[in-house]
Length: 382
Image (cartoon, rainbow, N blue to C red; front, side):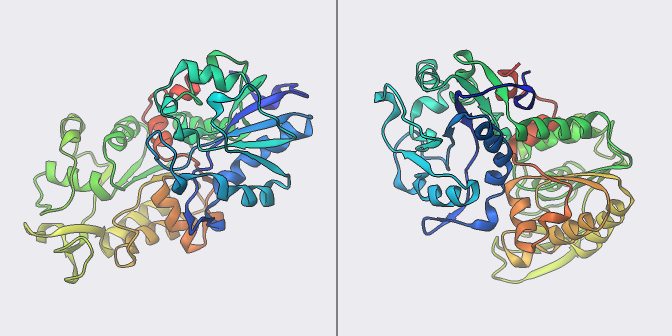
């Protein structure tokens, strides 16, 4: 793989894949949620310093291959200009009808997912993208698990390089997988269970502690024969869980949980032992004893990898377990890698982003990589 930092690219037009998929409110970027823009800054500055012109490609949300004003990148332009310190030309035109893109220093294409061809990984569309530039640079780790035209297919038509942020992310995750400082703690929560179970399986021989919350914990508890009531589980991962040693001493599941009869806790909440869960309960957070147990293991760890909240952390009444984990990691002194949009949203709201060693720009991509899967966007750069 060719690293941008080792290149001598000068005075070229560079197609730069970034991820500016940022949360917005009333058409404005939430300034405390723009860590992905800041992650791309070193690559942008490196290219500009060497006299290159940059065509930025990004997506926003899931517009399903059609133009939708709610997902336009136009509101990002002034915010990007403030951060980057350069004028940005916004290209609103349908690029399929353009022969050339006039770019002074930096231009930003409209949401690449407005084109159905993007998610189809369409080669003709990728060739059109490539026709605007001399070089392709991927600096968007968070989309590398997607076989999309601006991630994978475009690499067939241009010389390709790995951006500074993407290279750093790969290095950090490789070190966590291959040569971490022990004891190693892996903390997994959240809703999406399939890839997370693969991560657990990949780390069982390597990690010293694996702490589970969310849907993965619910599903493992169910496999162990515990009552989980009406809590969300993932039946599709049960065969994979059964292949693991679910009684493995490394797997730490909640010993107590916060339950309610409804998802919003309107009818009240109760903290009970796992053995006390009944058929109409919904588990929505780990309990205080579980948090204390997890925090005691965190305190012993030298490397910590965390993806996914412990419960429904978007609601304050169900965020205590996640916050306890965040605080414990922040003061542990361990090398910590944090990923996943919901997890990052919590620690950002707590104002403790700077307490962690590395904030991954990818949620799904981070999980796929930690699970040992090949990422199309990275494989295409080899």
